[in-house]
Image (cartoon, rainbow, N blue to C red; front, side, top):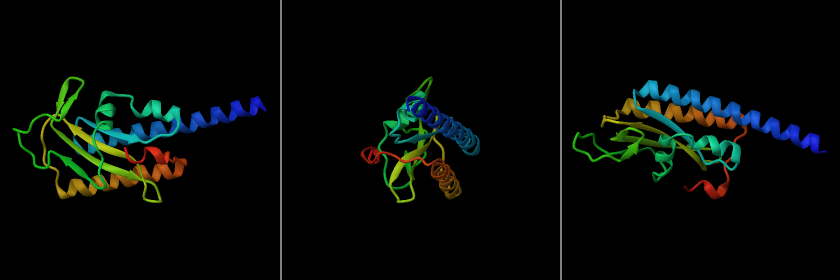
Length: 156
């Protein structure tokens, strides 16, 4: 019986590693698509293995500390070179952030995708459509991976 449990644990880790690789690929895609300093995917992970990868960089930790609404949020709402920095990540000050909640099939918030940039920038309606598409791609991958978030963490 212990042998079977170890095999199941190893299989579970492999699934999470695969999901982590998919998320890293999507983050690179978002960074290039939007031309931002970082694209970050954060999941409200109930599993310790995935949770460890969820906050692997200072950009992830910065985004995890931001409040998450029910829809796309832009900070600041209007681009201005005089806007104060939203925070600091590594060696740059964050001047722009866009947060989009990620949802499971039941509509529960299971995470977020965030764009952060070191300069203020406009966020066009076209960018909004691309952000929704990026979120849909992530949500689809989460569904296929069997990811589910703990209900106690969906409000963070």
